[in-house]
Amino acid sequence: MLVLDHIRINVNQGYWYTSVELGRVWIAWALSGLGASVMVSRALLRPDWTFYRRLAPVQIMFGACGLLISLFAPRLLLGFVTPFCWLLLCQEADGSPRQTHARILLCTTTVLQTLYAYPIAGSQTYFVRVLLILVPVILLIDGLDYVSRTGRLAQVRRFARPASAVTLAMCALSYPVLAYRAKLLYASLTPLNMPGAERVHLEKREAQDYRWLVDNLRQHCDTFVGLPGIPSLYFWTGKPLPGLVHRSPGTLNYDNWMYTLSSGQQQAIADDLSQHPNACAVYHPSGVDFWNRGKLDVRGWPLANYILTEFKTIGHTGDYQFMIRNQRQLELPTGPSPPTRPPA
Image (cartoon, rainbow, N blue to C red; front, side, top):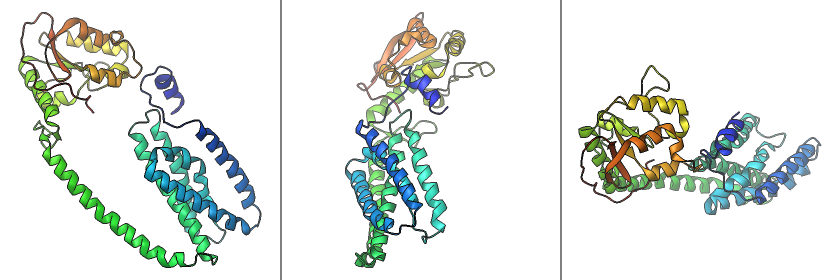
């Protein structure tokens, strides 16, 4: 159902779907991985000790290629490594039995974790690369270890331990340096200074946009709704969320409520909002475009149609429009900055 539900809701309806950027060549690569796994499985059933001698160069080459890809084209790791994760299980009979379960777990987890990039292959693709980098590293070590133990490249072991120590030491030293630089950069940004977000720093224009919205929402609204939703504004302004706690869908605490809530649930929010004469709305067109990957008609959503029909824009800051009911008369100064990017 993890796959089928997303096909029905996200993929077919164009709701919120971003595919992995892999060409068709990786389909052939995956099929070759399947075929190779069958051949290797049959070879392992025969007491042929020369098999590991032939496998070692393959492990070395695959591991080295995987590391190069991780450095120069990491987006290809998903296609390159996944079909060959089973190579982790190709151990010699006299190998360490303590590694058997760990290798099975790593192999299985690496493959299953790639589903984290489905159906949204955005920043999720960075997370799935972690184990996809470990697999070629281990395979490279397996190949080099076998070659060194069989007499060839015997000096590899002599340099492997100090090289590993130097590499780990450089990694350990680089992280404090990167963290310190990141801290200086973050401290140079503008503090937001909102309740519960005193330590949050943003670009100056973005912080000004949020402050302008919060100040006006506090002064002129008894409640408000965002198109799309910006739940943080409720916390910063102290204003109640629209919707009834004891009635489905409850209070409106979603950002992408356009897709999350059904038409009936959206209408329930609109009905509750109609009871507030001083209700306001915050319309963020680029934010709607960000969430509306299916390019659906905005007015097809009952709550969005209610906002765009019953409210008018009286001020804006950046790409945020401040809206009040058509019957109200109120003037606001324009906010301090030009359009900004959609909120995270």
